[in-house]
Image (cartoon, rainbow, N blue to C red; front, side, top):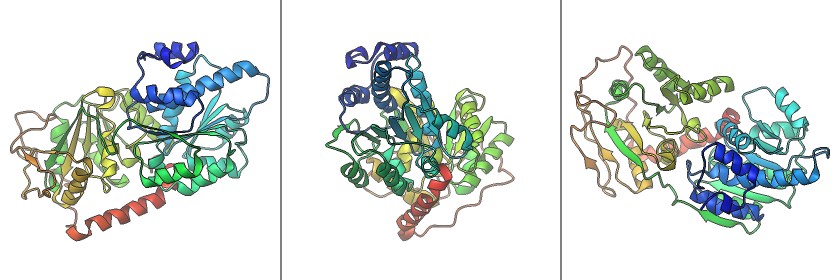
Length: 448
């Protein structure tokens, strides 16, 4: 199968060849013909599968062909709207569109929160063909009548499950209610949860369905390893793992914004080139941090779950869960940054005693073993307890693939992290749900 066989225009094929793309991925092979034929599409695809090109290429083709037929003098309205959950994903999708459409006369703009509206207003007044937006900022422009959506004939909901998780359902309904009813709707989601099915039933017309991976599936090439450790030794262990190869690009997930900044400062004090990215950072800071990480200026990026989706980092060797996520599904999104497009990846999780329940949730979700590997010199003063649904694989004394063989225990840092309060086992699930609801309420204002 080739891109030529999918019926793409020569201008798009030229751009793809210039970027080194020769063979479409399975999601592209399945989705592109359906989009070109005008069908509504409900597509299930994990990150790293090439899903952006699966909708971007056929939409650019339709816009390019129509613009060539109409000419450039005719006044135009935006015809395509792409909604994404985060600023980073919006920027990434926009960059991809510009790259794929570099030989077409298709005008695209991107609008998201965290930056001034003035430049976006000017861009919207130039009658773009295609708009990429986060829901919150788009509604701001709608309320101020800065954007005309009456000509939208194609809507794309990218990472729809994430948008619902972040509490954007009311915003989506408001935006969908403002669009023409006669349109093509494309919904891309990592999972087909009941909420996604309900959204599709409400706003889509006889959608074709494409499922490229089982729900909660992770890339085959990812090696999962769990390192049990006392909470007050986590930072020591992280330094130990990172020191195995200080040039290796590593994405480290922390649970809170304050914790991310504190951990980044600690790593920097110990000689690592590090940056942090989270919701309290300005958009300029977030953009610079991501750019520095991509070009190798920094080798460690400490992030909250805002970075779990939408970060296009090619060939990322390793992801470290410094804190386990409160919701098991977020583990899948986090480690989706590594092992992309068939490459090998490493997902390490530093698990304290207080996080045993969260680890059990992750194992039940994945329905697969996670290797339990205590690191010599960092063995905890307790035994990791897991349920019996998935037998644990214990490998006492084994080293992580990121750690050298000659292990030495570094000195205790001057600002050692306090252990978390012991969580009552019976309340773990309830606490996670409460935390999740709190995140949803705050996510809209934080990320859009």
